[in-house]
Length: 248
Image 1 (cartoon, rainbow, N blue to C red):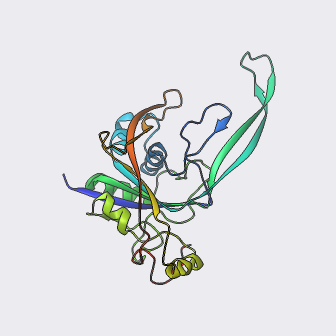
Image 2: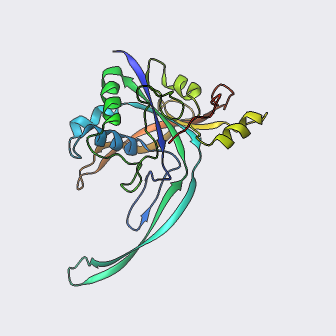
Image 3: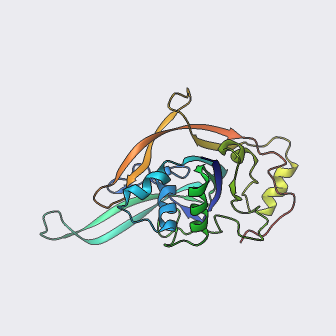
């Protein structure tokens, strides 16, 4: 079975990738979760929330994230009025705290069977249902994938025969601001790009993440564990676009 890697660009003014959201606190991770990315792909493919058989191969894809722009962690408060009480005898006002990332940009690489990734790529370009980055109110700011004729600099380059690690270390930098490009070209010492990559549980640097979705059904949400390795790749001259491209 041929193994390929699909590269996607996740960019939006606001993103939220909840990991332990319970009750009145809705948190976010500092990079996309496996459950969030699988949910995005499932929406693009038109997979119902309770179709566990269709979710399984998506959750089985190996995932790696490169943080091309670290977002700013923000928090806001939501007040909801006239919420029914648990006893049904009246109403109350609830206060919740919601966290999100502002201005973040991520390269997400998915490694797996090329036929499945072909279907995913086609669906991302023409989704059955709207796709969003963690919450319904957070649509992408630019295409996740290049289309025919694109120069594949400002978005994901799509499907390649390269391993996941190679894609993370060689894909053009997804930073879209020309002034930042110019500033980084002049630097002799640059900050590396953080990566979070699925790894074997036996890896000495493995960290557990409970975010592999088994079911998205409203009353049957279930997740399995995976292990990831946090690392980095250098921001080399080859990764910075040689010229500035419009990214909108």
